[in-house]
Length: 173
Image 1 (cartoon, one colour):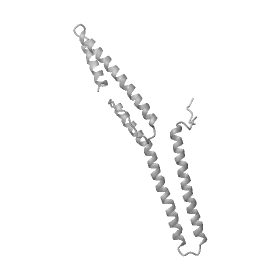
Image 2 (cartoon, rainbow, N blue to C red):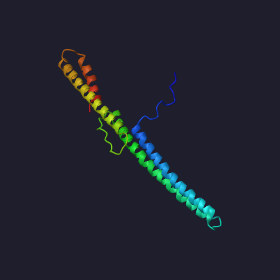
Image 3 (cartoon, helix red, strand yellow):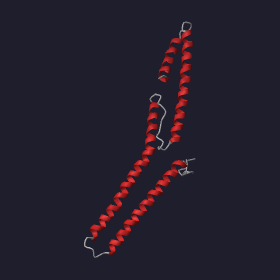
């Protein structure tokens, strides 16, 4: 059966989605007020149709209404997206370190950043991975010690020790 393309739940992270919805409502409300003011001024100017510089005044008013709204929208979008993109970049950097065999330090976010829960879960995963890695390293060390002690008795132990050293190198720091 093919997977469904329709989402079953749209409100998946109330903390983040509610804040974004409030910001969006605030932005739309402020922009509506600015557009209403601009339209009111335009209608007022249009009623003075005998004015000599009417087209110039019309375009100046339109320019000084729309350009600030676009600039404000751009700045708000950058600020809001930074609160998500910054934490995602930190998490991505830590994942890249894990992929190349390094042990990254826990991811820390600013208090104003979003995705705090994800960073906490990621840090928990890092600590569990580190514990598993340490357990594997201890087990490999114990196995190496046992094999070193029996090296004289079994000729194949040298080959096993070589493979074990490779594993220690792969899982070591």
